[in-house]
Length: 236
Image (cartoon, rainbow, N blue to C red; front, top):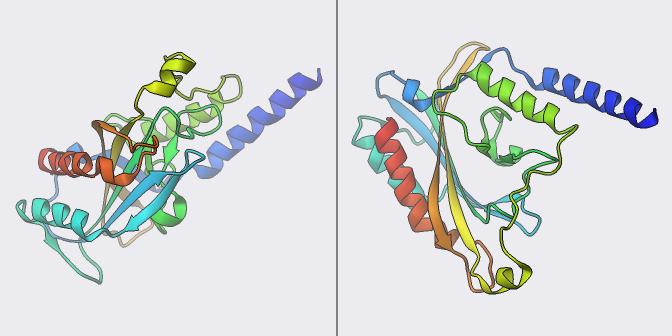
């Protein structure tokens, strides 16, 4: 009886939490739905690693080299970088390197999010994540419903952290593999409370970890650069 009461209270808390985080003024769309003409934009490019607990941590803010890949690619498509001040678009790029099999996916759900303090004032749990993967054409309402459904599933589901399909001995001898994750968020300037955000996500091929098994940003860097450029060329 007590256990059933506890689950009922927990379900109510999750439901209330989902309602509290829903933003009726936020429309999340795939970048493939973006059809506006090019213009000037501001840019942030952040690089992250997973820490010992499997949580993303910022290792490089506004990385100059990575910014160069973005600006050169968008310049060829008619976009002009604006150093400061209001612009027609705000572009934020979040790049992650980590071992996705050991990352902290959240309590009983596959979630891997950009730290709120690194994302800035426009942070939204329906926008700033690398996992779970989302379809590029997913609408804002669908993204929010999917997120809330994942929250509800936490009550009865076990941990969904990907399991290692290796024996303990094999795990000790096999090299650890890392993977890069790319998140691009384009936000058109808005003069009212309603916000429209266009999102694109991509993943790199596996890349070899450091000798100690750590997934540092450097081994993923070339793969992240290539995947980022490919994503921008295909979607913009």
